Length: 94
Image (cartoon, rainbow, N blue to C red; front, side):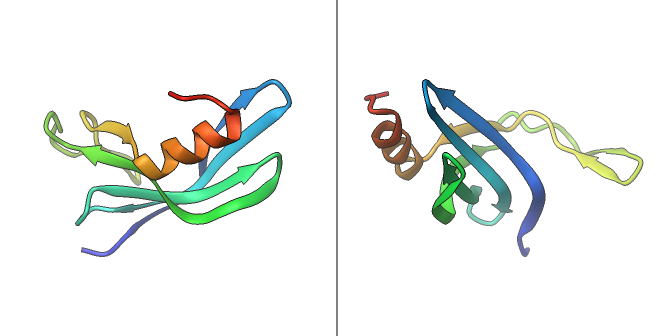
């Protein structure tokens, strides 16, 4: 099956003076897990961290748009590891 690398992918979360960037996503379709690098205020906090679990219960058939393969219907859930890191970084309990 292999891994799906999403280079230059990511998202940024910000609260006050704290910025968390999740980037360079890698999807393992065999385990339905998404991994990525975590930066806090520009400094690496974790590399290849387990960030999200992917659930394809409502997944629709693959669509092609040019060279891009589009999957819709996957729901994304924050992993326990990522939730702990985000709670600690943002000093919250979500």
